[in-house]
Length: 166
Image (tube, rainbow, N blue to C red; front, side, top):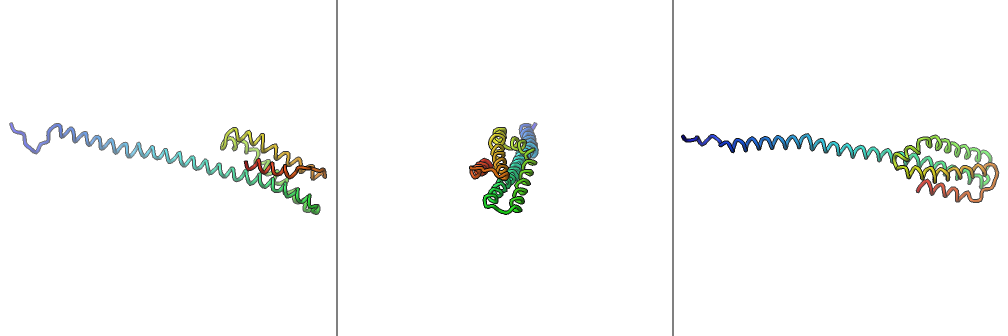
């Protein structure tokens, strides 16, 4: 018996079904798996970007507070050296102490954020290098305010500045 020419062979049908299955699998992988992977990658990039933005905000706030404290300490010192009147000295001391209070208030959380954003080594540097320099500066200013002489106050101020920006 003769086969009609318009009927496909079994191999052609299987090949067609295989191509449909392959096309479906490719679409499934392309639409779901790859897009899910791309979403995960983009999500990770977004989280990293947010982390860096928060890290930068912290550094900016920390630096502004530290610089304000050092600047106002220096301001008080030069007002004292220039023998400004008592009102100027009192006002510059109050400004400095306001900066110290703000610094100390922020310092409750600074070590935690320093460790979170920059690691334990940086936290140790904060405790062992910067904070002692700030304390030395503060004690020197207290001596000056009480009328005692401090020979190396300029170097103490410069050490604090250097440590803040290192």
